[in-house]
Image (cartoon, rainbow, N blue to C red):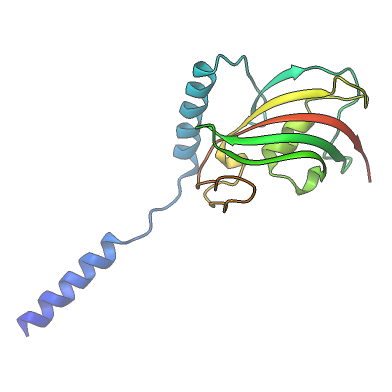
Length: 165
């Protein structure tokens, strides 16, 4: 009987030790902020924090109009997506993307640059905290490396053109 109680107690301890950690958005935001600030400093980036929460730097301004999520615009872009460690998780030559189908941070960044459809196209660097990217959900490797959960993303994007619905 004592052996049964001992085994039952051990099982309870094991199961409670395996309890899944809960996600805390506030502490993850603070962790992301520290990582972003270190990345900006290490790479000598002059970034601005948008009210949405992304950091961005206009690399090549273009005087043209800006796309808008409100107008359900579709953008034509060339981009490279990287993790803070430099690993490329995705890239595309000229591709067309609906702003409403994108992660929030990417869509927010697209609205900050313009294009008139001629070179030099608008180019932007977007640093996206995990809450505006894929959050706590890992993404499998597609064209590059996998994206671990709670990862800050860095995109360099050329806005070639856009159109509404």
